Picture 1 (cartoon, rainbow, N blue to C red):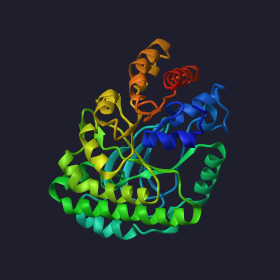
Picture 2: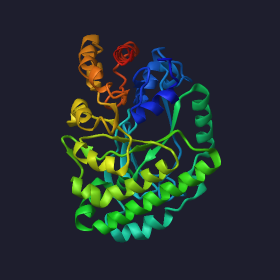
Picture 3: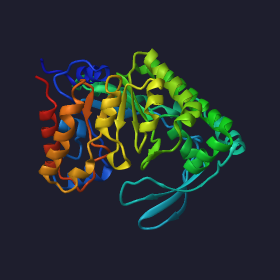
Picture 4: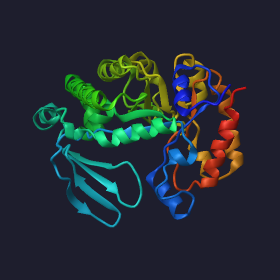
Length: 361
């Protein structure tokens, strides 16, 4: 088969149609780019997409914080951390020296009344929420370089917990589901309204990429029944709107989400990413169960890169790639993000070996 562009390749992979090779994409911690620049492995102004020739390019276009006019308020700061209240009324502690998930300290919203009083009225489709120029430039760059271009952002689950935290959100799902359903519906409507504004003026992307971390180690945050009753309606609404405009949907979800996959398929996703091994996800099992209906990206244990040992990489790739490439529905990606302790040489070998195994005759 003739060599394809990234755009052509990902388009076919999402439909499980023949391609020349498996796809290629990756996420990195910010620390990694900084470290690799310091060591001379990548230029300061060079993107990973350009450096490694990825098939996809993403752009995060929306600011979904409730109060756009709120200036983050610093409550406490040390050499290593900073504690701030943000425009969602959330009090979060972040590390200053390295990338990490922020610590949830406190939230203004803990139940329905605070949501209705402080947050919901502010969630309007204000044009200030949209980075028109950044989207335009990223789309033009992807088109020029033949990459599959995705609008990227978070869906309803990942939009709720920055407002009330996982604990209060999950308690609400059990004790006051109508409150959480209202949050789901509000954020789904806002997402679609903003996309309508952006895409009508700047053009549609090739696809939609939703981040939606719905699991932790060995368990999802909710049961499949609770997913279908509370979260899935928001997914169906946003995903079906995207697909009605010709945009396939990739959904990222860290953690163990296998029990939720049938419901996510019902909602209309075309590809599941990132398939986190250390949380209990099994790429081969998912492929054997859903590979005729779903494409996959990820599922390669990033920990095999930590020791910079090519033999470990070989074993991981050789066990998985020849199997999951069979239905033409796979994109090479680690099961999380590449950290700074992985060398450029190691990661380049990971790509080289993975694509070698992922070529089609």
